[in-house]
Length: 449
Image (cartoon, rainbow, N blue to C red; front, side, top):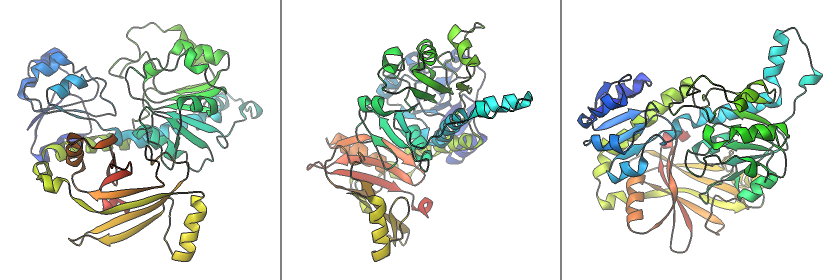
């Protein structure tokens, strides 16, 4: 397979693709037009955001089998047209979700504790303690819009801060033990800190505007580590002035170019931006929430792993019988009025070795490999079992999850949401004929030890 690397990435991406048998060419400087003239020679292209892969580009790419974007979203690609052409689309939100979660938390803690202003004042010889008295996260409600990889990573980081975490998402049943899914109306009634983790699409474009802001019951703080175009900057500035928004942490701005490498299309500074850079209650960073030393490696590893799974594993040609194989019970989940107290009961009287997730039972499969089953309790108001109304949910260990889900969709089985990938495996969800929600897990048991 011949692959064009069109953006500079971590060198392991090229090295590992070549280990799979790919022939990789690098071209980080040619114009889009020049790359179009030769893309017909390639089976795959790996890109970040240097240029848009539109229908014209795809038409030129007559041999293309995959487009991989080293990042979380696919907004620079004509997704629908690529799918019509049978091209596999690969993104890597798993690679930088932890970085985004840490960055969002770091920004709000810095803003709440006046760290930027206090640091600059001390450097000027000013020692102003009362002026820089901070506020605490504890007791506040954090509302998250968009509860995918990034939103979940941020919610996980908030554990231990004694905050209530709620989320709104257009998909049902995305809430988990770290966050309760609610309606948009409820989120606007309860939120004190709003964090955006939405992809770039028509729904999110200009979502945070004056009308949207005015529906919040409480004045709130805004965190945006998603896309700058989700926020109408003029409306945000007006809300900052009238105290409807108490402060903002902005890693992204609507003025950015598509490539995210430069801020402005020209040298003029919008009036709203001038306000932001002088506001004491605004913290800015240059689209680096997912931009860590570690995430650069993880993003490359994720792309390689997905290319390998799609094109270079024996499982891609497995029989229907093998695809549908369930290998065991992966987890037993049920609701509880008081999960913390009930876990302690099981630990005291039945010697369960409980942790924050519940209890992990280890066993060996037919080949003698270590395998695990998870026992977990959820609060009785959890939305993780939704849309099922049952008090329980079973997790089944499976092989070749992606092929299985494609097969189930083709046979009309109700599939909920998209496959999600974590360090300990891939997950998907379906409903059986009696509306029991089933979690399917292709595990990596070694990462649970």
